[in-house]
Length: 114
Image 1: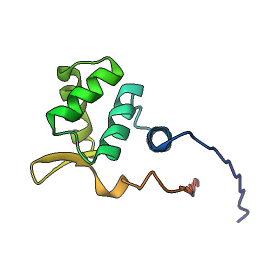
Image 2 (image 1 turned 60 degrees about the vertical axis):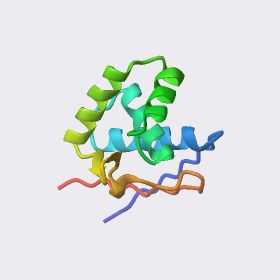
Image 3 (image 1 turned 180 degrees about the vertical axis):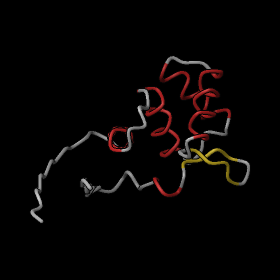
């Protein structure tokens, strides 16, 4: 079987943008159809470690011009599809999709038919 290799290199300005880019790619590859706001909340939560603290929620609302009820709706949706989990009373990213966004990331994606 012939393999096609395509390398794409992208440099971002900080860990926030890298996290957003990573979760955008995961959404696209897995056909999750996540909205921009959902991806922003996932990236924010990944960097902060959780989205349970009031100060984190307030910070996200302020930075992204949104409301607490909107965040609660997003959290509920993301828990249903397994992106967010509740661990030790805190809402966190599923450990299967959390990375250290301060380090370079190399993604290898295999798409095949059949």
